[in-house]
Amino acid sequence: MPSVLIVYASRTKETEKIAQLIGEGIRISGMEAFVKDVKEIKTESDLQGYDALVFGSATYHGGMLDKMKTMLFLAEKAGLEGKVGGAFGAFGWSGEAPVRIFDTMKNIFKMNMVGDALMLKSASLGGGISMAQEYGKKIAKKLG
Ligand SMILES: Cc1cc2nc3c(=O)[nH]c(=O)nc-3n(C[C@H](O)[C@H](O)[C@H](O)COP(=O)(O)O)c2cc1C
Image 1 (cartoon, rainbow, N blue to C red):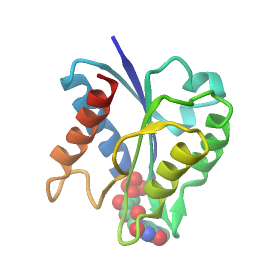
Image 2: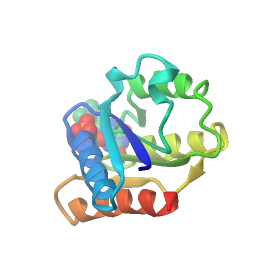
Image 3: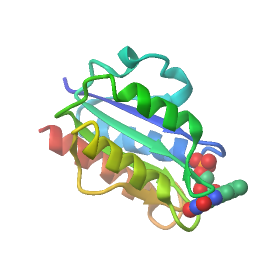
């Protein structure tokens, strides 16, 4: 069964909730999803062995949280070329983090990215639940 790793960096848990909902969408599609706090990723081997990887961070002061920046340097060495990928994050008004993560996965890691980064103001308001689950389903669909 294909497996997907979802890694989030979150301060007040909105991005964490989005990560869990993306995981639900993947499981609804009949695939395995593992949702991890970025703190759990210690070496590049923690990112290996999955068919797809989805990374997310909340936006603070116009960028991603530092822990996610550090993890992306690990990911650079993890051999993710050609793997299915996606990016997400909660934001308030500008939402740079998910876009920067998406672009790094696409341009540096050469991953096979789903349409766009998922940006939500809230995990639970304004259709956020279904949008996040749908994002998970899109990842699963790309895996076939
Ligand atoms: C000090 C501070 C700075 C923030 N800076 C930004 C920002 O530059 N752009 C933006 O879109 N949202 C910004 N936000 C809003 C957060 O991204 C938003 O609250 C988000 O839901 C937090 O996600 P989290 O719960 O996963 O940490 C900021 C929030 C705080 C408290």
